[in-house]
Image 1: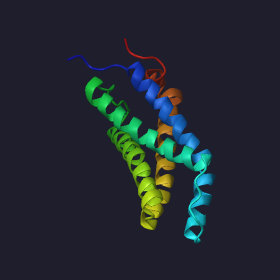
Image 2 (image 1 turned 90 degrees about the vertical axis):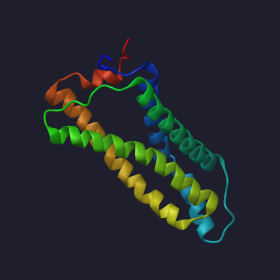
Image 3 (image 1 turned 60 degrees about the vertical axis):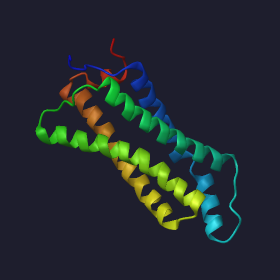
Length: 162
């Protein structure tokens, strides 16, 4: 089987859709955070459009992450490139961590919200920071490839393979 040189249209679309959903989760988290704090203080759990959007957004991220993993398995992905073994290992760990966070964050959020499990909420809060760090590392790596190595890596996420 020939080496995979790029991503499919579906893989690229899902990448950017998930990126947008994650951004939305961070930008509009205040509604569910306020509702959670109210519930912890003894008030009835508030369910409004902001809470619903956060829950639906998390569910979509979880579903799309699983779909992306299935597509990776079915369609393959380009080889990780780098100028050292450390860089390749870091890329592998970063990608694995991103997928793990995209799965564990919605699950921990659902367990916290629907099950009232405060430990899950605490884990959710830790995972939010981990995900941000992984995203930052992912972006820095992509920019390093684009502007230092100049190896065209970013083009793989803009144009689908044929």
